[in-house]
Image (cartoon, rainbow, N blue to C red; front, side, top):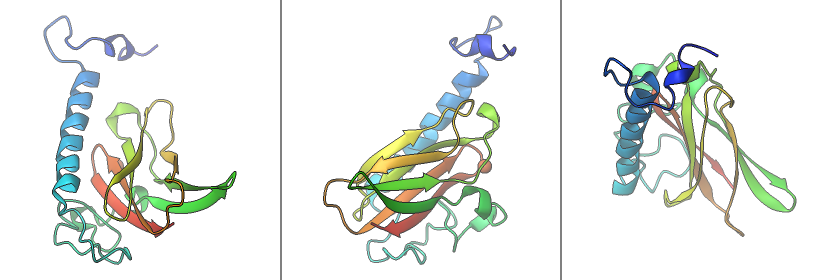
Length: 167
Ligand SMILES: [Fe+2]
């Protein structure tokens, strides 16, 4: 067991400092709240740009990142842009989201994937344990769903990335 492990279930160390795990959780929670607010406010993605070309927002490349607008992370596209595929499993459409990013424990990892529908409504999400998971997730679509889908992938160091596909 590493020296880090004993602190995982404690918020404060003996000297009063907040544990690394607790700080990571707080940062992740704050990022998710900001991220959720952007989606909820409806300005993350322009509704007329479902093709995935540039998602129709000046926020692309600044607030969130895409293949076409990687902004300050232009050398990070390959490891952060989620790949989205739709396949049939057992007669149901399933969405597979993959981020080609190594997991370096809580130091540097993919925090989660989120799947959104054509109106940017929440469908499903997968939180990752960086010590046990690879950043690959499988999601069910609502019965009979057909149309654009959006995938968000969040790195704890390199922010939120957006990609889309047709289901
Ligand atoms: Fe990263």
